[in-house]
Amino acid sequence: MRSKPRQRGAALLAAMLTVTLVATLAASALWQQWRDVEIETAERNRVQAGWLLLGALDWSRVVLQEDGRANRTNLVDHLGEPWAVPLQEARLSTFLAAQNNISQAEDGGADMLDAFLSGEIIDLQSRLNLRNLLDDAGKVYTDETLKPFVRLFGRLGLPSSAVLQIANGLQQAQGNSPAAPLMPRTVAQLAWLGINPQLIARIEPYVTLLPQRTAVNLNTASAEVIWASTENLDWAGANQLVQQRASTPYKSLDAAAKSLGKPNVFQSDRHAVFTRYFEARGRLRLGENVLSQRSVLLRNDMQVTTLWQEHTDWGMPAVQAQ
Image 1 (tube, rainbow, N blue to C red):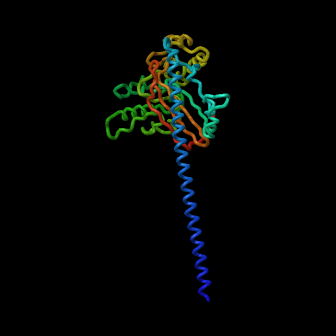
Image 2 (image 1 turned 30 degrees about the vertical axis):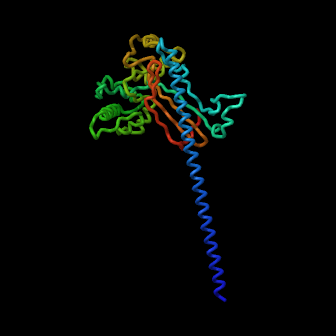
């Protein structure tokens, strides 16, 4: 008689274990299916965002090409031109063609309605080019070439010894030694040369690293860069130049010098009023995910070439539009 309750208890326990196992397997299968769907959705969004940012890059190239066409007879680039106007964050659907006052994105699902695009084009010749520290053979230039950077670092409250450290690091990176560091492509990558990250963050708005030596565009450079690149110009003169160009961009170096009453203060090997190197930045926000891309562009006459581009992955914090 006692064996029957034990058998019933064992059967009940086995049934409970079976139910638990089935529930566990079902939950695991459901979770795996959900995970696969999420991964596929994220990958699809990543690919779509990449294509959209590629389209934004093509738009930037067209803008620079048209600017080159307009300035073909007189090469002048300034901050009052269309390329210099940043694109504030806006819903992607506003850029799409509309039919009967209804955006095409409204028929494309919530993905398009939640996508926001922003970007800007930056004149890289508005900054001091670290490539100017080296000659074509990869050797460090003379003290005369180091002076603009020493002046800039002094203005920023940074040690002048860091200029020589950067120059020597770039020289070593151009060498063929197996122990040579990698050649940086961006200012942020100066960390490869052992440069302090805090110093890099401080100088990044004022310097760039381009494939060849470049002059500073007086129509777009900051007062700090203009002052640092011009030996016989005081700080007040640099600020005066920046204020005057806001209403009347300079069409030549002579015009800029005359506006200050200082003939021949600018040198053609250090200064210019036009630009060949630009940086195009694009940012796409899709829900809580963000993809950013930046590209360095070289403009020769009306031909705009992409030298390199990089992007950051999903998951970076959303940045509010300025």
